[in-house]
Image 1 (cartoon, rainbow, N blue to C red):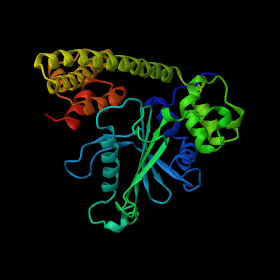
Image 2: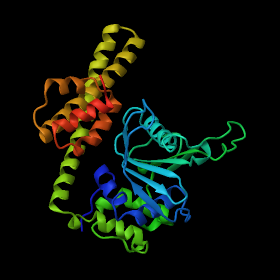
Image 3: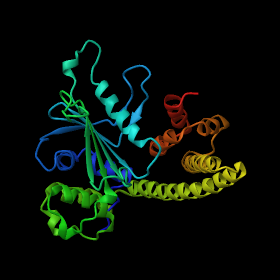
Image 4: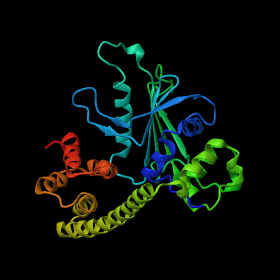
Length: 329
């Protein structure tokens, strides 16, 4: 057996967000958000495309989005790269999901809690060794929960999870092990087969069960991810070199530090733009000057969102529409 990597957005969506994934997602959320308790009994997986109902709110895309049986909404994002302002993006998306619940004429008591779950393949909180961190609104001294706890953010930092197969003691451990180790396994461990939802997740993740079209799409995405890692590392090195040179020219410690930081940021952004342009040309053909100009104006955060949306485009018209909607001039 060879399993697809659930830490890529394509595989994560296929395993947790497909039509047959309701029971898998219920088990996963109960394990991650509710510490293994059977809190969620049913849910509906809904369209992750979320335009803003309120004028001025930007359109956003999630990896997986669901409506729980108690009326609460949850969004889940798998993030492989530590892009600028990722924490703010999760908070924004979760808050917007909360706000978007009310339609014209509806009243505030109809609002239900919104939960944002971010699974990251990098460390966000160096000051803590916890793998799963949950944040809610609290009073700053007494730590009292805000009434009805309208927002909850859950961060799962996979690099912090280092348990071996023999050390897995509960269903939360097993789901974390699945996310980290699935692509390295040749068979499903017996201790994980006893959880039907995890066994089903392995079945979906088995490359043998993918169509030729799905395998081709997966390989394109995996290649893009590898190129993206290389481009980011190269651009960091180039930016660091340029920044140090600029800092030395200033001749002051402050100038060196500022120049180095600015150079690294510029280098990273150039690397992102060049990589995305290559992928777009490979998938859609040559880009016109208007699109080239629009791409050069995108921020690092916008480039990261575009990188996740690329594989949904089938024509230059789709790309132009995305740029007009998400990044107006």
